[in-house]
Length: 194
Image (cartoon, rainbow, N blue to C red):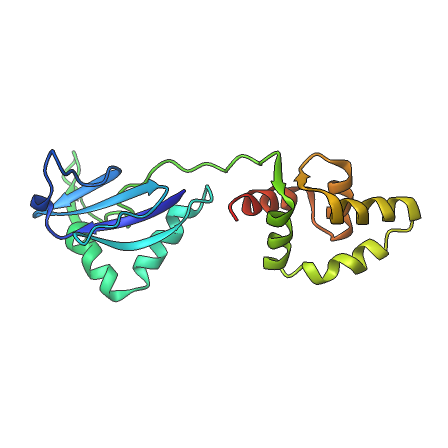
């Protein structure tokens, strides 16, 4: 899944037969921002993608908003719809307070992704490469003192088609690479998206 913040310069270019993408929508003066989630980004010249990233659970939205905030051109489009100008409000007792609108106009719910039961051996090895751990594999296996266990882990690494999260050999393999139990969950989540 991909999360994105989309900008539409002219909402009247869409209609009931050709609707805007769905998501959390904010409109202003015929323009729109949409916090969108889907499998592939919309391919439509009427839509500008201000920011996009693979949905990885909690923290995805913040990465998108940070990308916009750090780009002056994208920020200009964003604030043309979502005004960030502080406002003075008066409470029930007549006291004035200046309130700044939150930067995030709306987003879809985020939650940690579930830990996959397994990933393919290709996904698992690719994730090791991305983490820079692939070159430590042989040395880590060689450090296993029990000869039988060392051979089992090496055989599993070379022959397994899938790396299962709860497999004792996978757990031993992760331990040899000094990957903590919590890090293994993140490792499996990231590998499953490759």
